[in-house]
Amino acid sequence: TWVGSYANINFQIVPPPGLQLKEDAPLRLKIAVTPNLTTSPDTLRAKQENFVQGVAMFNFLVRGAKPGLGKVTVDVSYFLCSDTICKRYTDTISHPVFVKKD
Image (cartoon, rainbow, N blue to C red; front, side, top):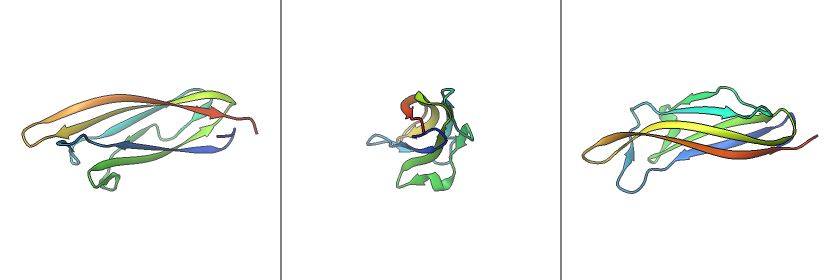
């Protein structure tokens, strides 16, 4: 992205075969960015419209504030269930974002 411009981040949770996302359990994304990026809000909570055919989908924007290599980090917590058990999982995913001068 460019300084002053936005990048759209798409984030999905796709359960492995035999497991399903528990849609009525808390599912939260905590978003952190490096100082050359901004985002708001920094926390997303799943709503019914985030679930499509068993996959949780989120979109959020980050804005380039200063040139250079930045990073978006998402901490996520969710529940996966089988026919016999539900278990809470947490993951952290990071992705680089390069901000160019205008």
